[in-house]
Length: 144
Image (cartoon, rainbow, N blue to C red):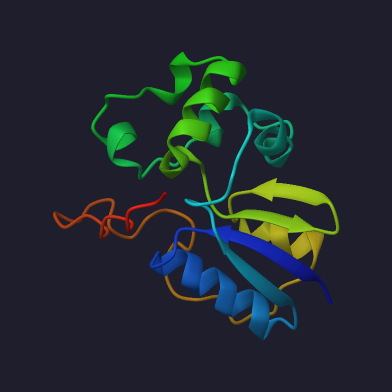
């Protein structure tokens, strides 16, 4: 089984479900706070592989949801610069397994990559469950 460095937003319900599923599938999950990690463009870019730039963004980030930021409007360099400054914009989770890096949690892709059991949590485990809720997720604690 795999040891996964799992970069998450602490308190995110879906990141919690993803970690529980990974652990129940026999993997070791080492959770890290995505929001306080010291990101650089060079360090962050490999997580996105061949994904289109617009898919690098956390669609539930307030500035994306409000339309203030249009993920399709940015080049890779612009997107990375924004994400280094505002980690809440980064699609999560970011996962590192022995140097193989991925962004997001597509269950079929994760199953093919490292294996998952059949105990999938209910609902969509990647999209923010509060996307249609009037109450947003709690604001992250101040980061320094």
